[in-house]
Length: 310
Image 1 (cartoon, rainbow, N blue to C red):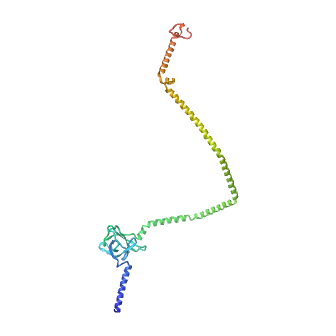
Image 2 (tube, rainbow, N blue to C red; image 1 turned 135 degrees about the horizontal axis):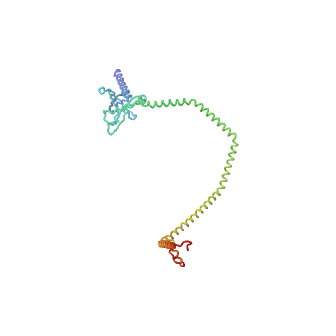
């Protein structure tokens, strides 16, 4: 072979390796089988060929083509090359999203329900995630409230600026008072110890006296309980006797054999007594009208006796 042929062959091989390496760096794998899917977006700002297609953070494909559909209101058709081993559901969603904090775009897939898989060449549902600007825009009210809160805190701190000196003065006076109290305690420590010792002796003496009075108090309580029980027992015994006598009296009254029972039960006594009263009343009337009927020696007169006439 001539030198020119060898140089041309080496240049061709180098160009092929360079092309393959460039596409490999962009995510193209010529030796991996792929399935093509399509997504239609209204706007794909920042999306370019070779941007990654991601499922749960793992790159499973790339954007192979981005084209304008002028006959369909200028929508954008995006062609996806996805690894053949990846199965997508018919309800899979392709979200245009930021893949890093710098705003690099990519397609994030939600595989959907795999029981009804999509066929290669199907069009997936398009979803556009909120960008960083939209997130910051939605966070604007929170930022405004935070700014207002910081302003109010600054106003409070400014208002307390003059109070700091007063607080320091108060703390200084408090420290002086504590020092004075400590000095007083140190100076009178012996006297305080004597007072505490005397107080302890008095308390111990009182405890001893209380312990000595304990048996006396216990006996007194027992005596009081005994007297109370005696009085109560005597009272209960008297009440029992009284109730028994009342019961006997009531039983005697109910018994028709006794005098009171006959008087209460038998109405003949009442009738006889009533008849006796009637007879006595008649006798008194007769004696008043005819007194001489009761004086046989004087004879009978039908006139009433008058004092001094006879």
